[in-house]
Amino acid sequence: MVLFSFPHGPGFLQGRMAAENSSVTEFILAGLTDQPGLQIPLFLLFLGFYVVTVVGNLGLITLIGLNSRLHTPMYFFLFNLSLIDFCYSTTITPKMLMSFVSRKNSILHAGCLTQLFFFCFFVISESFVLSAMAYDCYVAICKPLVYTVSMSPKVCLLLLLGVYVMGFSGAMAHTGSIVSLIFCADNLINHFLCDIPPLLELACNSSSVHELVVFIVVTTVIGMVTVTISISYALILSSILRIHSTEGRSKAFSTCSSHIIVVFLFFGSGAFVYLKPPSVLPLDQGKVSSLFYTIVVPMLNPLIYSLRNKDVKAALRKTLGKNNFLRKK
Image (cartoon, rainbow, N blue to C red; front, top):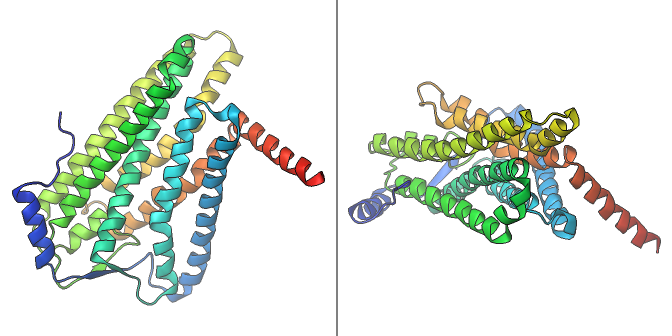
């Protein structure tokens, strides 16, 4: 089954000609607002968000790496989720912060396409990592006796390989589609990043085919991930309802509660932006909605998994305790 279409043959040549015929060599990112009084407060706010995102995700990556108790499939995927969130946020936030302190926040045509590629790569990869984590929860709760076999290191690595292959494929499909657009005089992107909807709005040539590509890729990714997560949690719920003790049910539910919260935050905000046509969701409203899954969700993920997870809190106390002991010595 072909899930993503790649530009090749005549389509590739058409994209190359489009890039050569385009008169735009750089774009201007409009940012969130043009009101001078809001620039510094917003800069400080989002700088704070970025610092929390970097410290939280790198801290969780370090914690998982240093503690052997966390070397399990669940934390293997959480390690990669934090890595993706860190890279994802770093692809977007520094450039957005520049729009608050510089008069002209420009980005080269090639730089814009590069940002778009990595943005798509990390977003799609995160979607499939969350899907793999749902499967891990299903095996842990519904098939605990065969968990070590079903989630062996080899299986985990294959799942992770699939995650990044899907991320790369989706990013290539989106970026390849945008490359074939022709941009004429207008180079002001009404957004804080090089996202697909504002780039389609600037194109001189017809963007209907490209909108169709976006819709197909997004619905394919969300469809595959939604089916995997829905089936996993339907089976998990069925298994939890068969547990007679209240303590057992509570323990089983707590295993996946953090993941459920993250899934709803990420997919809810993403679907709201990309599965609605521009006529229903104007760009000004769309870029505000985009803030949630591009800036806020990567910041919240490590907080949700650390504050609601006993193993992570215990590992953190143990690591901090070791550091204090070494200092005293």
